[in-house]
Length: 429
Ligand code: PA5
Image (cartoon, rainbow, N blue to C red; front, side, top):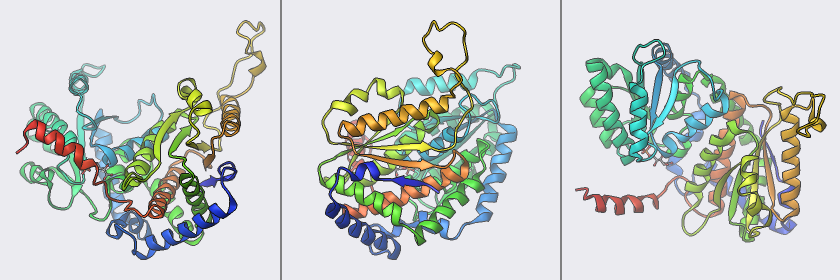
């Protein structure tokens, strides 16, 4: 199971502050369970774990197996909650340099024309054996009307139809709401295969629906283990939520004291994208009504050489949340050399895991001494089960924390404002 360690963070709070926040977190959890909190109609992310749908997992696996067999490239076209979860899981569990299975590339997560042009050039570049690449696309949009993926889909759909003619329809899989949205109209017109996103599951809580599961399965990751890891976390946290409530309570007590930034740090680059998923989960859920901690992703030790100074000696309004993995992710070690020209002989024979662990402990010590309250969120190992556990644990922590703030964790009304301004400038009818 996931360990949520609050020992360091607690040092920056008083006992009565945490006790009060604990009581509040307990009430928030109850609200979530009994459906008396705001946005109760969007608690489907819990229901899908309370009653797992094995038939759906099988359907997703079947579709993924066909793509894996046929495709050189899978384009995942979506933005926000419609792609960050899949990317987080794939980057955490698949080697950065793996040649096994289709290459997964992302589109529709921004509007850079240069990126899309380069992507199309990449699709047009033949494989090493001279044959054209075999391309599949999974377009994902719950509303079916989000501008960024809609534009990329229109352009890439044209490319696919030019390339494959009528057969393009067999290579395009859409994941969207059951009804409504422009994407459903396109699906009806072209007959693309469709996976449904349940109405009661919001985008950033949807990684364990076909939204995340199809791309993850295409990447060759065992989605049953991922899913049932989350089911296990759901069942255990329903019975024993104490540690999670303590985490949300201490985080809330610090927030009330003026800590307004949560630096989400990890020491392992495979977890970098996971930081982006958490950033969206926390940020889009919390940031409303003038509330919320600003989540920022730090990839260590890389960012110790950019934001490390700010963490150590900047304004003291930052807390830090480390995501760590207990079991070593590799065995690679520093070579032994007779001469010590590079001065590294003091490390010879040590694994990079050991060195990175000391880097983590040293950073933890320095930042805490510098006035940064620290949480540690630890996975036993980097496996599909543990990643599934982490997903649900953090989803639950988000909902409880946002109820502590008295807000609706599941909507994002503020996102509409940039869209309205942009549409006006673009002259959208
Ligand atoms: O969490 C959310 O609901 C959002 O981030 C959405 O996922 C994002 O805006 C994309 O929306 P859609 O899936 O409707 O295209």
